[in-house]
Amino acid sequence: MNEAAKRLGDFLDRHGTLTVVTGAGISTGSGIPDYRDRNGNWKHAKPMQFAEFTGSLAGRQRYWARSFAGWNRMSTAEPNAAHRALVDLEEAGHIDLVVTQNVDGLHETAGSLRTVDLHGRLDRVVCLDCGWREARSSWQAMLEDRNPRWDRRVRSLKPDGDAVLEDNDTSAFDVPDCPVCGGIVKPDVVFFGENVPVARVEQAYASIAASSALLVIGSSLMVYSGLRFPRRADALGKPIAILNRGRTRADALAALKLDADCAVTLSAVAGLLGSVDRDRLANPEIRLTSR
Image 1 (cartoon, rainbow, N blue to C red):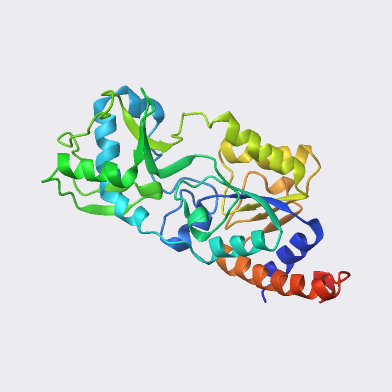
Image 2: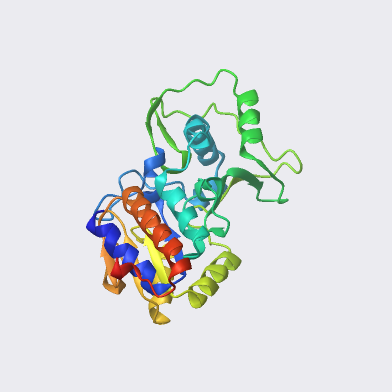
């Protein structure tokens, strides 16, 4: 067992139930690119802004043409060992809630029962005018019907189902209006420049208050949307552990900072704590540090 897994296993063993916050780094093992490098800098051009999407047809054409090309990668992504390890830790009673900044739905697919999709889900679309909602698979079929001859080669894949196309001209891409009211349809996710629904934040805050500690996985916490949670935990006197490749904005708040692979580390921790939990049934005094 590697040192990172031992240290994180000890942290979980000492602190009971945790609230977990996850970011893009936990899904790279599923083939989904992340946003930032080890220093927290953008690897790609910044994502579509909410004002740009709602403010012009050209913005929506650019977004949907690229998302249309990248959807297959997102829709076929499978949970990796890190997602499955969190399911095991939840079942063993170590996790109160998983708050994810990701929009890929992989925690739920893996089997996590208590999750908050902080930024929404890419597998749904919503009308901004009437609130009509539909599965993204159905919307994808509508895009195909409206663009039967659209064929743009993908140069590279980006986070959250986006793609860089060989031909950047998307002016011919036909974007459907809402079939109910004719309004603007967007993915059911929180864009940059858009506010996270208050109820999701409050649910996460309540979990942090009730949990013994906070664990951050695969997030640089460079935007306030995620950074608010370690700050809240710190204000409440809750210990914080961070498992992430590279620096984060909350490193100074962490009682434990680990620069290690998410899947390898979490899998080892889940295996170790699972064996400890089974032993505790026979001997309640046993602790991970004594093994």
